[in-house]
Structures are given as structure tokens and as C-alpha cells.
Length: 398
Image 1 (cartoon, rainbow, N blue to C red):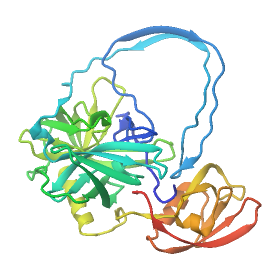
Image 2: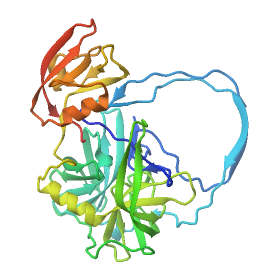
Image 3: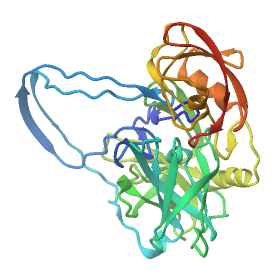
Image 4: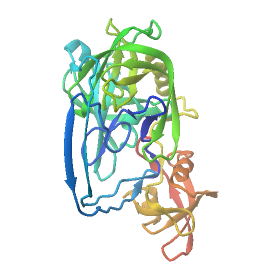
């Protein structure tokens, strides 16, 4: 859906692996900052052989949020082979979180599409007793609805997005009707040091059950490159705490606490594919500073207050015949639907700015505010050029 622009992220470079933040098509399963699945470290020894024959399956897909969705198809492959995997972890296995470790920690579940066909899950921290929640932007990115469960009481709340910083992967939520919540304790002694023992607490695998993974700080002030699952670009996360701990998908947005139980970081990414996991956390001092700006309503080049402007078109993964962005459909009740845009149209410009890709269309739309009227030029399915005025509505979380 143009107006949300999901950034499905994965670590690239020397560290390798995937970033965290559950998201999947159709059901809440694991996938790291992305729509799909992730391969977690294998601690067993497996061997096996197999063979088969047949033909490859086929599939097709439409794009949403400027990205394409894998196609569906059936079939069987040909070939023979032997293989397996081995791995032995030296890290302490995660265990069920204690009552003390659960204090102020919430689990987050989101619906990503207006037809409720996709869901995601992650973790968050309670900053105030009336329901101010700190989490990662990628945990709530693209969400059309957000549900938060206080793991201390088991009570469930609806949540609204106060604001988010997509560049630094920080978001702030507000729970509806919350009061008397237990809060986390933030460390005010500065960043942890290499060698410090820390514990990550999170909604591992999106099960809704908090677990704790003990580990060690292996480095500070680390920079990593993250890549969209579509492979269309990379972004940087900087100044992170590197941790050797069994951090897995779903832990994103959860606290990393020191030996005193105070929060020193917020889990945001981890490697995969090896027995020992390298996790990364945003220093809590950094996350707190950004959260304070969001709560003060201070928008910037990276901070969006509230929900972003939303055109309301679903884009195709094919290029329009006129070189613009092909429309696969519209969201009911959106500005695009009200203005008469429909599947088969091709958007060529917004307010005179030419658009040739879904990413560019998203960028142009989100440079506006909710309620703005924009001039949309497009060609319809017959090739006729048309221009309509569209009122932008509030879209999914950016």
C-alpha cells in the first residue's frame, strides 16, 4: 500500500544474517524485520539423503508497499543429494523470563494489511504507567492495527502510534485506557562496557511468552548495514551495542538489561546461520532521546509524528505501459478509491513530480501531511491521460 513503505531489513556485510521483528503473510510466525521467514541457528547434527523428480511450480504476485510479495505455486523439483548441518552453541539457552524480568515488558501483535491477511509480532517496553510504549519502528511498520499485551497482568490493549524514527528504528506507542502499569527501569550510568553481562528479554518466535537470554557485551558503537528483503537497497544502523546472546526473531523492541536489572539497550537485530548468535541493541540513551523528541511532537527529517499520509493504492510488480507506477487496486475508503483510481491505471506524477517506481511514489506521498490534497496524473487502462485530486488519509505506520 503506497503510504506505508515497509522496509524489510536484514544485516549484510561481514556479520551476515537477518534482523529481528516478526512479520509474516497470513499468520504470526518468525521473520526478521521482514515479511517472510528466517532460518535460525541449528544446534543439532543432521544428515540425510533424498531424491525426487517432477516439474517446477509456478506462481505470481502483486506488490504492496512498494515491494513485491512472493508468488504461490505448486510443483516438485528434480535432483539427488546428501547433506545435513552441524552446529554447537556455546551460548546459554534462553529460559522463561522471571516475574522480575517481565516487569514493564509487553508483547506486540500487529495486522499489516487492511484485509488482515498478514500479521507480525515483537516486543516493547513500558515507559509510563499510563501506557507509553517504546519499541522498534520495524516492529510496527506497515501496521493497520496494533494490539499490546502487558505481560505482568496479561491485560490486552489497543495501541496508537505516537511517532516513529524509521532511520534509527525507534517508535513510540500509546495504549488506550491504560493506567497503573509497571514500568521498566532505564539505566542512567551510560552505555555498558565490553565484557559486561547482560540479559535480553523478548517475545522470542512471537509465541507471546517472554524468555530471557543471558549473554555478554562483545563490542560497543557498532555500525551494521541492513538490506531490504526485496534487495532494492541498504540502510545503516549505527552506534549499536554488540551482544553474544541467543537473541532470535520476535525479541525486537525488547529490553537488554544489566546485572542490576536496568535497561541498557533495545534489541534490534541479530545474525543467523551460525550456532552462536551475534545480537545488536540500540543504546537506551539513544532510544530515550529519540522517544523524548517524538513525545514532544518534534518532527524532523527522520521523525514522523503520528501516522503518515496515505494515497491508498496497491501497486503491481510490473511497470506501467507509460513508464509510471501500475495500480493493482485501491483500499476501500482511501483517497485514491474516492477519487476513482482503479486497477489497470498507471500513475505518472503527483503534484507535477514524475514517479517511475513504487518507492518514489511512496516518498512523494509521505512528503505531504494527512489531509493534503494532491493532483494525481495517470493513464487509465485504455491509455487515456487523466488528472484527479486526491485527499490523503492517515495510512499504516511508516
